[in-house]
Amino acid sequence: MAIARLYQITHTLLSFGLDEFIPEQKRPWFARTARNSLFWIRNNHADKPIGVRLRLALQALGPVWIKFGQMLSTRRDLLPQDVAEELAVLQDKVAPFDGVRAQALIEQALQINDINELFSEFDQVPLASASIAQVHTATLVHNGSEKDVVIKVIRPDIEQQITADLALMTQFARLLVKLFKPSRRLRPVEVVKEYKKTLLDELDLMREAANAIQLKRNFTDSESLYIPEVYSDHSRKNVLVMERIYGIPVSDTEALLKQGTNMKLLAERGVEVFFTQVFRDSFFHADMHPGNIFVSRNTPHNPQYIGIDCGIVGTLNKEDKRYLAENFIAFFNRDYRQVAQLHVDSGWVPADTCVEEFEFAIRTVCEPIFNKPLAEISFGHVLVNLFNTARRFNMEVQPQLVLLQKTLLYVEGLGRQLYPQLDLWQTAKPFLEQWVKEQIGPWSLLKQMYANLPFWAEKMPEIPDLIYHNLKRSNQQLVNITPKKETKPILLGMLACASLICASLTYLAQDWLASGLSLSVSAILFISAWRKIG
Image 1 (cartoon, helix red, strand yellow):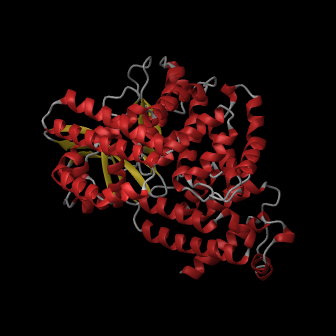
Image 2: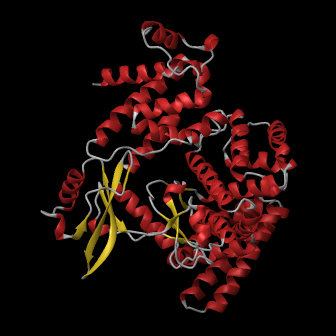
Image 3: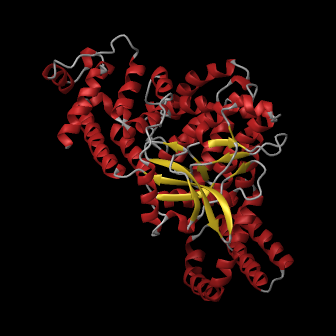
């Protein structure tokens, strides 16, 4: 089976002339051997550009390869722009499988004898069909009332097909790295590994359900974004039941204009939703292409997005968020030295990177961008240019940043489609500056210390003994060894600890004023001690 599939893949790649992707003089021996030994396979598409041939080949190879092409289309750091744009045209639409089979799979997953036990209506004709799953409409009997729902069901036997193709894809990547050294710069093994994780995650609909529930919780009562309700009691690994929505596809600008939608506000809210997910929640919908985004038909003057298909999400840790926000601000202030330094400080590029050379490379690539008005600058392409430059300085692949870049490109493209004059930077800058201020300023320090008060209160009984024994042990050493000028920060630190203890005690006594004052004194003393040390 694997050999037959391997031959089919090789046949497809050669028949579309994809060996020509590599210049003939640099073509590795195994590519030449494959072409010569399978001499009867001709390039039947020599008149088409290489990007078109790649897209057609991936379509011919089936769902796993189509989705791989879609992922590659967002990796502008790996592919030429014309090829990436051609792959973006790939559509994840395939013929549906039998609705009777889908019904049987749903009944089996939900352990019911008949679909009518839970659903008063079920349409065997699918509403939509994609490579991994298809969707049917139904009416759920829930808590004595009927709810319009959609049921997403994973295709039968798709997991085995995906696993087999992913294994071959991994072998291809390893072979490429081993036999064609220039390919190492593109990190094909890491790219396939990243894709494998994303694809296997999509096979587990309980993961998608959990993502949707979390996103819905994050945007409870939001005027900007609505996430349909998930009926988790009736969802399983291969079946997902969720509220049916009746919005307008975000790509249907004609329908949106016809109902009087405030397009400027809608575009700006897309930016707001994205940055809120990334910087406030650290949890963002990472598959925000137009097919997954709708606009509510209610209140067109105050438009609201509806997001579906939460199978792919991204997360950023606190350090990544901080460095990313500071990078954006520094970049748009044209402070390229700061951009370079932040990349080094974050660990995105090696610590021994020459900051001056890196700064010059960033300036060379990015400064021409600012010859345009800000409203015409692509935020997403700024990120692409930045990462492309960093890649030359051995920046490691950062999966979370790849998802972020992909999502930002979607959001920006969507916003400009809705409202061409959208100035994404003008919309985002106040949000980013406020976020950085909240995270780094003195109030942030106070909030963090206050959040830790319950911990210190719990440890309170141990602190006096620890202080006494440590002071007793180190007292003589301080007298004999410590220079006079170094004792001041130590004393300030001890006073800060004492103030923190007072804050914890008054916190336990629910004396909020005294606790707040003690905490403020502690923070001031800590900062003073730190400055003395510096």
